[in-house]
Image (cartoon, rainbow, N blue to C red):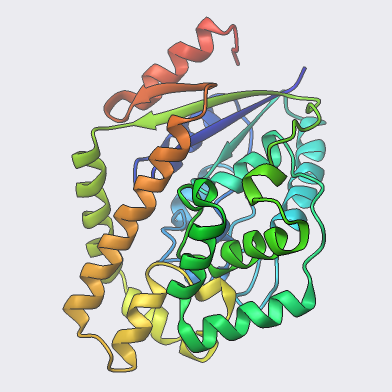
Length: 302
């Protein structure tokens, strides 16, 4: 059976480096399941792999969309599985990497058969977002489904829209709707998670934000102001700086909010991964060697 090695972990923990090293070791290619890295205009704010890193091994689903494009998780599942089938024709092993938990889940397990978005519900939710802000949507979901609320990226309005819409349509929590077992995949999945003490994770996140600013994050976000209401830009790094550019916040405060919200996202990632039972954990300081040792014990060799 073909094998998909999925690299997971919190933001800023070193997933890209490990994925590239494993891809080189097994002479294969990488599929990204980082939903923010799909958008070509957000290279700095999403910590997209550098041109040098992208040149080391072939990558897929990085910078393949514009922030003006609509792209659902269902579309990603179809596109990614199609790409996997193509890659498995020439490779025994493919690497998957990314910290977007539901996007990884879509590939390794599949999505549930949920109803299509209800236009009336979507308009109502759009109105709530525009008038009352994302906090109102967060409060609605927290009351309707506290379990899913504890896992979801609450700064992403698309996630909130989808969950609330499904709950309104079905009368069941989103957690109940996605609890049924999915069909088995025709490839084997080996999940490798990179772990570090929480204080190290938070320190690396703070350093990463500072590095993004050095690399031109302000100019990148400023160039996207015209599209600031697009769903793709309702994300950490953009939302805060838009408030700086419209004069609501000072730059120092906006930067601290980016760091705080990035740490919050990492905390949600930790909560999600802690509940998963099939992740093989390796230490962030020695992730490459430990991953290769693990794969050797599983008899996965070049």
